[in-house]
Length: 190
Image 1 (cartoon, rainbow, N blue to C red):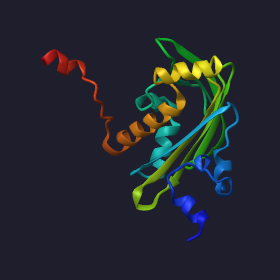
Image 2 (tube, helix red, strand yellow; image 1 turned 90 degrees about the vertical axis):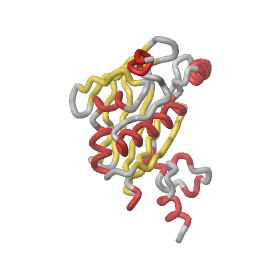
Image 3 (cartoon, rainbow, N blue to C red; image 1 turned 120 degrees about the horizontal axis):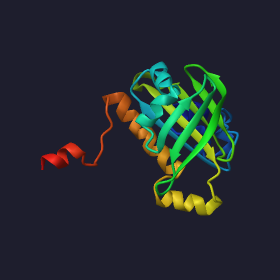
Image 4 (cartoon, rainbow, N blue to C red; image 1 turned 60 degrees about the vertical axis):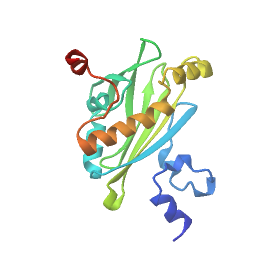
Protein backbone atom coordinates (compact mmCIF):
# COMPACT_ATOMS: atom_id res chain seq x y z
CA UNK A 1 0.00 0.00 0.00
CA UNK A 2 1.37 3.40 -0.94
CA UNK A 3 1.33 6.54 1.20
CA UNK A 4 -1.29 7.96 -1.15
CA UNK A 5 -3.63 5.01 -0.38
CA UNK A 6 -3.19 5.66 3.32
CA UNK A 7 -4.26 9.28 2.85
CA UNK A 8 -7.50 8.17 1.19
CA UNK A 9 -8.30 5.74 4.01
CA UNK A 10 -7.62 8.29 6.73
CA UNK A 11 -10.61 10.22 8.06
CA UNK A 12 -8.55 13.39 8.47
CA UNK A 13 -9.23 16.09 5.89
CA UNK A 14 -6.53 16.55 3.27
CA UNK A 15 -6.18 20.18 4.34
CA UNK A 16 -5.01 18.96 7.75
CA UNK A 17 -2.09 16.90 6.46
CA UNK A 18 1.27 18.04 7.77
CA UNK A 19 3.30 16.86 4.79
CA UNK A 20 2.53 19.05 1.77
CA UNK A 21 3.75 16.34 -0.62
CA UNK A 22 0.82 14.16 0.49
CA UNK A 23 -1.83 16.80 -0.10
CA UNK A 24 -3.05 15.30 -3.38
CA UNK A 25 -6.66 15.76 -2.29
CA UNK A 26 -6.16 19.13 -0.62
CA UNK A 27 -7.08 21.00 -3.79
CA UNK A 28 -10.64 19.67 -3.44
CA UNK A 29 -10.77 21.29 -0.01
CA UNK A 30 -9.79 24.69 -1.43
CA UNK A 31 -11.90 27.53 -0.15
CA UNK A 32 -12.19 31.01 -1.61
CA UNK A 33 -12.82 33.58 1.12
CA UNK A 34 -11.23 33.92 4.56
CA UNK A 35 -7.77 33.82 6.12
CA UNK A 36 -8.48 31.39 8.99
CA UNK A 37 -9.03 27.82 7.72
CA UNK A 38 -10.38 24.88 9.68
CA UNK A 39 -11.06 21.36 8.41
CA UNK A 40 -12.80 18.53 10.26
CA UNK A 41 -13.98 15.04 9.31
CA UNK A 42 -16.29 12.47 10.82
CA UNK A 43 -17.28 8.99 9.71
CA UNK A 44 -21.03 8.41 9.87
CA UNK A 45 -22.65 4.99 9.51
CA UNK A 46 -25.12 6.12 6.84
CA UNK A 47 -25.11 6.07 3.02
CA UNK A 48 -23.33 8.93 1.26
CA UNK A 49 -26.38 10.11 -0.71
CA UNK A 50 -28.59 10.25 2.40
CA UNK A 51 -26.03 12.39 4.24
CA UNK A 52 -25.48 14.64 1.24
CA UNK A 53 -29.22 15.21 0.77
CA UNK A 54 -29.73 16.04 4.45
CA UNK A 55 -26.75 18.41 4.70
CA UNK A 56 -27.42 20.08 1.34
CA UNK A 57 -30.95 21.02 2.44
CA UNK A 58 -29.72 24.09 4.33
CA UNK A 59 -32.97 24.38 6.26
CA UNK A 60 -31.85 21.21 8.12
CA UNK A 61 -28.64 22.83 9.36
CA UNK A 62 -30.10 24.33 12.56
CA UNK A 63 -31.00 20.77 13.68
CA UNK A 64 -27.33 19.94 14.25
CA UNK A 65 -25.39 23.21 13.90
CA UNK A 66 -25.74 24.88 17.27
CA UNK A 67 -24.90 28.44 16.21
CA UNK A 68 -27.22 28.61 13.22
CA UNK A 69 -30.47 30.38 14.02
CA UNK A 70 -31.90 29.86 10.53
CA UNK A 71 -31.08 29.61 6.84
CA UNK A 72 -33.51 31.14 4.36
CA UNK A 73 -33.11 29.35 1.02
CA UNK A 74 -33.81 31.63 -1.95
CA UNK A 75 -33.07 29.15 -4.76
CA UNK A 76 -30.71 26.23 -5.55
CA UNK A 77 -27.63 28.45 -5.28
CA UNK A 78 -28.51 31.37 -2.97
CA UNK A 79 -29.39 31.55 0.72
CA UNK A 80 -29.42 33.95 3.66
CA UNK A 81 -27.82 32.86 6.96
CA UNK A 82 -28.51 34.09 10.51
CA UNK A 83 -25.89 32.86 13.01
CA UNK A 84 -25.34 33.39 16.74
CA UNK A 85 -22.35 35.53 17.65
CA UNK A 86 -20.68 35.96 21.06
CA UNK A 87 -23.08 37.26 23.67
CA UNK A 88 -26.66 37.55 22.48
CA UNK A 89 -25.84 39.08 19.09
CA UNK A 90 -26.38 37.53 15.67
CA UNK A 91 -24.62 38.05 12.35
CA UNK A 92 -26.17 37.65 8.92
CA UNK A 93 -24.90 37.16 5.40
CA UNK A 94 -25.91 35.92 1.97
CA UNK A 95 -24.23 32.87 0.54
CA UNK A 96 -23.84 31.39 -2.93
CA UNK A 97 -23.07 27.81 -3.96
CA UNK A 98 -19.96 28.08 -6.16
CA UNK A 99 -19.39 24.41 -6.98
CA UNK A 100 -21.53 21.30 -6.68
CA UNK A 101 -21.10 17.66 -7.54
CA UNK A 102 -24.46 16.21 -6.41
CA UNK A 103 -24.06 13.36 -3.95
CA UNK A 104 -20.34 14.07 -3.41
CA UNK A 105 -19.52 17.69 -2.60
CA UNK A 106 -20.50 21.32 -2.65
CA UNK A 107 -18.70 24.61 -2.00
CA UNK A 108 -19.96 28.07 -1.10
CA UNK A 109 -18.80 31.60 -0.54
CA UNK A 110 -20.43 34.46 1.34
CA UNK A 111 -21.42 37.78 -0.15
CA UNK A 112 -21.01 40.99 1.83
CA UNK A 113 -19.16 41.95 5.00
CA UNK A 114 -18.95 38.56 6.78
CA UNK A 115 -16.22 36.80 4.80
CA UNK A 116 -16.44 33.01 4.78
CA UNK A 117 -16.37 30.13 2.36
CA UNK A 118 -16.27 26.41 2.57
CA UNK A 119 -16.38 23.00 1.05
CA UNK A 120 -18.19 19.87 2.27
CA UNK A 121 -17.20 16.52 0.84
CA UNK A 122 -18.90 13.12 1.23
CA UNK A 123 -16.70 10.03 0.59
CA UNK A 124 -17.67 6.39 0.84
CA UNK A 125 -15.99 4.63 3.77
CA UNK A 126 -16.93 1.07 2.82
CA UNK A 127 -18.75 -0.84 5.56
CA UNK A 128 -18.22 2.06 7.97
CA UNK A 129 -20.52 4.41 6.04
CA UNK A 130 -19.43 7.84 4.81
CA UNK A 131 -16.65 10.26 5.67
CA UNK A 132 -18.00 13.82 5.83
CA UNK A 133 -15.31 16.51 5.62
CA UNK A 134 -16.07 20.17 6.20
CA UNK A 135 -13.45 22.79 5.35
CA UNK A 136 -14.27 26.36 6.34
CA UNK A 137 -12.37 29.60 5.77
CA UNK A 138 -13.41 32.77 7.55
CA UNK A 139 -12.27 36.21 8.59
CA UNK A 140 -13.29 36.77 12.21
CA UNK A 141 -15.04 40.10 12.76
CA UNK A 142 -12.60 42.44 14.58
CA UNK A 143 -9.67 40.26 13.46
CA UNK A 144 -7.71 38.23 16.00
CA UNK A 145 -9.43 39.96 18.92
CA UNK A 146 -12.78 38.87 17.51
CA UNK A 147 -11.44 35.33 17.10
CA UNK A 148 -10.30 35.28 20.75
CA UNK A 149 -13.71 36.53 21.95
CA UNK A 150 -15.52 33.96 19.76
CA UNK A 151 -13.29 31.21 21.14
CA UNK A 152 -14.00 32.32 24.70
CA UNK A 153 -17.76 32.06 24.05
CA UNK A 154 -17.45 28.74 22.17
CA UNK A 155 -18.49 30.35 18.88
CA UNK A 156 -15.18 30.04 17.02
CA UNK A 157 -15.65 28.00 13.79
CA UNK A 158 -12.71 25.64 14.45
CA UNK A 159 -14.31 24.55 17.73
CA UNK A 160 -17.88 24.70 16.52
CA UNK A 161 -17.30 22.61 13.38
CA UNK A 162 -16.02 19.69 15.46
CA UNK A 163 -19.10 19.83 17.71
CA UNK A 164 -21.48 20.27 14.77
CA UNK A 165 -20.12 17.24 12.91
CA UNK A 166 -20.36 15.17 16.09
CA UNK A 167 -24.02 16.23 16.45
CA UNK A 168 -24.68 15.36 12.78
CA UNK A 169 -23.24 11.89 13.42
CA UNK A 170 -25.48 11.38 16.46
CA UNK A 171 -28.57 12.64 14.65
CA UNK A 172 -28.04 10.54 11.53
CA UNK A 173 -27.04 7.34 13.35
CA UNK A 174 -29.51 7.43 16.26
CA UNK A 175 -32.20 9.92 15.27
CA UNK A 176 -31.41 12.25 18.17
CA UNK A 177 -28.65 14.39 19.61
CA UNK A 178 -27.58 13.56 23.14
CA UNK A 179 -27.07 16.42 25.53
CA UNK A 180 -25.99 16.89 29.10
CA UNK A 181 -28.35 19.82 29.48
CA UNK A 182 -31.41 19.32 31.61
CA UNK A 183 -34.60 19.84 29.74
CA UNK A 184 -37.47 21.96 31.04
CA UNK A 185 -39.84 18.99 31.47
CA UNK A 186 -37.46 17.21 33.87
CA UNK A 187 -36.90 20.38 35.86
CA UNK A 188 -40.68 20.88 36.24
CA UNK A 189 -41.20 17.28 37.43
CA UNK A 190 -38.73 17.78 40.24
